[in-house]
Length: 380
Image (cartoon, rainbow, N blue to C red; front, side):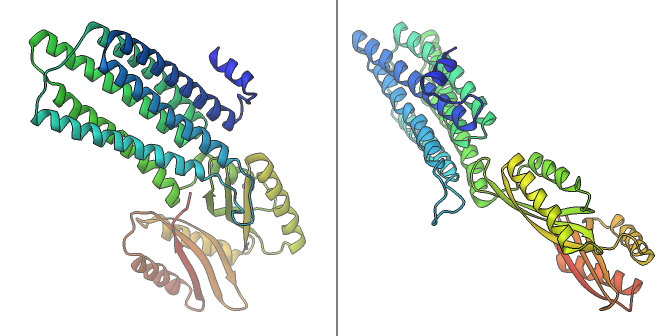
């Protein structure tokens, strides 16, 4: 109900990625501001510094949602001469900043907890304080889970990081309440130890969010489901015999450019290949939003010589530990040269040894042919 009102008020599309990110960020900002205001008013009326501090903390929490909102808007900027692939990666920088804030929060809590452990202080606890903290914790628990769910739906690392911070607030509040109950029942303060446990949980969640964002910035593997969809579309073309070596370059959520190599019959004309490739490029762009570049491999699937060579190489590959497949096999009878690409897994350590093994096998089977071999891993 609330989200429908937000979508309508701010004229956002609930089916679009940007609409989901912005509406969820607005909801998070509003809830944090309302919660902060209520806490500060109650704290001022009750003369409770603890409740006022909690309110101030909620007010600062709204800043992470503002970051996510601003990052989303900036990432929508159109490509420029300086940045021809657009500004989508600004969202990753936003996620990086929010992850850093989570880590700073965890570090500050850890330092404060250690200080309280060395210099213990009596706790000042009231029923009103616990009630306000408990109510806030339940709101944060719902908001955190909802924000994470929406962030994953929209593939927004920034929104997921905001949700993690909200959920961390719930954990802090829950452990604070538990330590207060222990103090009230047993008269023993475990506040410092509870703070250490809480800070470690926060640091772990912040490190996880940071690791995922850095992985994207470094160039993690493209989305497997997108790659499978693209392969299926490409292989469905009548002119394509096989497709391999797909690379997907991530320039922000839902912003990809890529390349792929396709095998086509070596008797096909350039005009035939061009028409098919051009149709595929348009289909992929308008269906998946991916700008795809094609590399062309000539293939001979008709001659008995090529068929016999495929059988021999298939038998060889089948018995190798780290070789997962091969493609782009072509025999140039004029130059007496064998072209072939071999795919290996990421556990392979000695690539030179594998190259020598492949070369020795082909040399023994086909001594009259020289070789042009490529050994590589899959990219997606």
